[in-house]
Length: 596
Image (cartoon, rainbow, N blue to C red):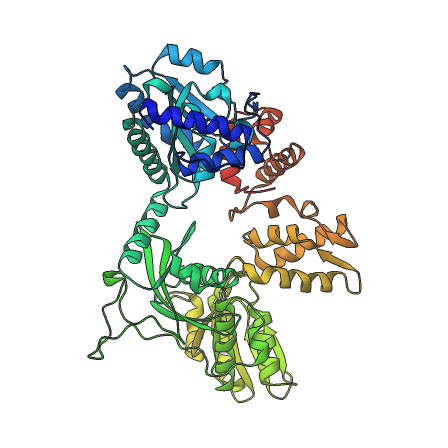
């Protein structure tokens, strides 16, 4: 498209198309012809030129920061070339323009090619910014390839700026000039520069995300398995997307986050809601002393991807040095119908492990966060295992002096907070109860040998971990419905789909009691009918797991209320709150406010 003959042919084809849209556009690049058809269908007028302007654009974004050094270099390299360089955001709105030629800049001013103006294709027709979003690739639109007459004096080359981690199109880098001075080398130059901005987006991410991405790329390049990386973000290769339904993906993601805290697990089995079983090979991604994520090699147990050579030997581990072969954690060989009510693989594993231990009369140490449902789980399983048996929960040795007669479950609650004297007295009383009571204990985490409660370890035989509620997001709607039934029995009340998404996205640092409290407050606002997202407490709209002070609670709720009042517009919210946009963004990140 760089010689005058080809430009003339496209100009003639454009004139014919504007008169008769149904004719063939021979000699016109496919992406240009497709853009002309989209522009006409969107109602764009070829002889009327208007460009939408947006006053509320944030020009200080992560994209602009990452693009700045590339734009500096590109401007310096093209200082003697009559071009203008523009950066557009993910909505095709120009957020920065740099002129290497004041003459070209003045001409572009006449067509509103300036920061704040939107060049979406359905607004101004074929162009080097909006058409990139529609075509999904770098394009050069020269002269009459533009749909609108006002843009035909120009040539513009735009290339997508992609986030390497998510693959999402974050913006467009565009170089514009007069059509008669366009050179095909500009196309290559712009594509390269856009790739450099994408690399900066990756570098701008935390070390943890970079490490997770690098481990994922390494695993994906060396295996035929489905690969899933889970950390602050989630990455799946195509095989994983084909193997796992959206519901299955959620189960695997939640189980991966649960596995991040269990350094000893290197291989695992996960039962999916539909009855399939997945084999996982687990590789932890560590940055310093912290585990920033896990990379999983996933295969279907019924249709394993482990390939065997003709000699019968299994091929090398696709993760190489990332993992070693260890015995698998086998699922129970049976499945009671009530055991699969949860969509959390970690919860179902804990349930089956408790069942097995009780069947074999093995004393249990059940660990997990306060409020995660440890006591409820023990009670429910025991009622299935020993119908009619009684459950006694004790916090002190005085509670075991007058126990009911008969078979039962004795639960030592929160042994990790007991002092040495209480542990010593309980340890002395337990042998006399062994014949009639099955013993269980709860604690927040494993008991170290130096801990006072270690004196009870000789009376326990197995340790089982219960996942916190944040690792059971798929269970939150069902749990919320159960809690509503408890809080408002017989009342016609339900939760809207949007409110359910808000509940599932929150981290619930205080687990089920906090969910019960949130729904209780929502019921005060809407006693009957369908609970909406705005009925939930402000903290439900955040993802922060940090315990806030009273002053921070007040500040966070003020920010949330302001954002709600302005429809989520962060620029307007910053102005209303009387703070700089950068300060507001830091607060949003600090409080984990992700959506309204």
